[in-house]
Structures are given as C-alpha cells and as structure tokens.
Length: 98
Image (cartoon, rainbow, N blue to C red; front, side, top):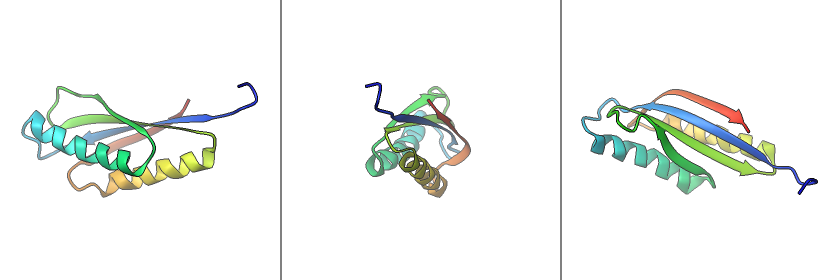
C-alpha cells in the first residue's frame, strides 16, 4: 500500500434550527439535511455535536478518495446543498484534510 495514495477530508457543519421547539423538530431538520447529503454523495454523515440542544447541531461529513480534485468538488457541492436548505441556518462550515 505504500505506492498508493488517498485523501481524506472532513467537513464540520454547525447548524441552527430556529423553529425547533423540541428534539423531535431538531431530529427532523437534521435528518433532512443528512439524508440529502447521503443520497447525493458517497460520504459518511453523522450528527456529532449538541445532541441535547433543541436548536443547534453539528454534522460531520467525511469523504475518502484517491482524487483530491474530485473531493474538493464534492465538498463544494455539499456546501452549496447546505446553503440551499431552508429549514436550517449554517453558522459555520470548517474543512480539514486528514
């Protein structure tokens, strides 16, 4: 495996769900965005923060591949998809290469 290279990138997306009045409302909004990401991209997606807060969430999206340009394109498309979501507000999106 020493002659093969691959890339891993992690997006951390912090969300505010302003209309959520319960954890059920929050789960519905978070599920909506995570399902959209999963259905359009070959990525691992999980809620990783603020599980006990009604109006906040952190979602992690991880991509692995051997073409860095393709991964950069996918992360840009995820950013766009998140920006188009009407039921959540994005407070920050951080990306790191692992």
